[in-house]
Length: 574
Ligand code: FES
Image (cartoon, rainbow, N blue to C red):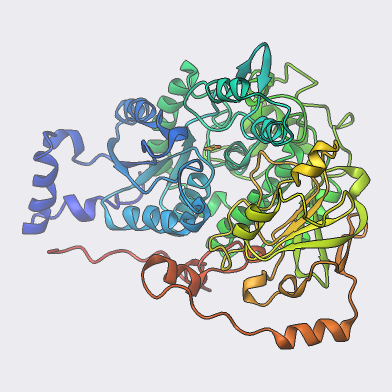
């Protein structure tokens, strides 16, 4: 270990404060020998009973501690905010930046030499990566892992993806009460994250491909004993990272982010990852414009056959070889020299990967989709961009002109969408406003607008829907998302009216309002600014500082500034 341990500033001085710091650990029952001179490893745990996906992390953290002790470190576990998609309202996205601040400031303010980041549900992964990227002490990530495949009467059930399908069946009057209630107990059979390639598995897969996890760590099922073995190995490895002084700044490079974009496309992963990658990169001072996502998507195939883009579930993905097998297949398209927490290059870290099911992870020359899974659109409705997940959309709708049916906000949409009098037909374009970072606030996953039940009953299964909101990574359909700037800050979406024609052209990457330019100007000039909705608390802070979707929705003041370095606290009397 070439450098003095960061924790030595707390524990080494023969002063009253050094005494206090040592005495604090002694009061927890540790002997002096258990911590003196050892790297102190923080285990940053997002366990919470309010987050069903992450409840297995307490068991996992014990296995991490085992590894830390075995490698000569001293583990100290701490909790942060945890964000569970199912219970947190209006959306976990409102709190991602708050959790990132929690992670960064807990590491900064405590005697930690390195940190193990225990994540899982959607926002916990980007939040921890954002905090770790800003604080830049040696860090390694370990997720809770995906839950087991859902099962109902002999058929496999995918989290979210099958829920939305059954919900539409129920709204169309084709699913009984009994079946609906029985399904409730069959969809999620174990702890862990969604078993489709939703946002959670997309983000953990990208974290692994960016080099922030041990190979294979992302996709081992949550209840599988191999996850605990991986946890122990992760605990051992963080001690090595401290000894080697290998920090996130050497791993989270531009090359690593470009690899992540390629893998995102190959996975057919969640559109939410676009926002998170931009935000994480921003913490390292790296700009990832939306245009780069589009450029790489055009030349990257989808090779992973998982719901919602494909057929299989996360258990199948793990048995097929998981992320290491995908990375190995994708190496010709990746920056293979990117450094990983293993201390090796990305290429070396997957050298022994094996793919055992070529229908789940396809060869590069037999992809699920030759051109990538994402497209970035621009036009007079989205001057700063919008995204569509083409791999989960209907190709027949990629070039479509239709009349808008406008909902001014979520409440109005929920009130009117199933009204038999709603003036919507199968060629209509459903428009939802005020679902963006400021408008909602927090940019909830409202973007997969429900198809009006009268159209479902006629057998319609997809239609064009556009909004400034997000969509669950388990969602699907011809859904244009993340329109930027959003309606609430004066984006052109705000002036769309029911009956206007809207043109979607995915091959040309366009989204346009087919209304005369002078009329658009007139409507924009006639808009009155909305009065502030919140006067105190976190919501006010969020609205004052959140950036737009194309900028990653981070708080502006949390992005890296030119030449800044993580600052250290003054250590003395508190
Ligand atoms: Fe937590 Fe899907 S709800 S991962």
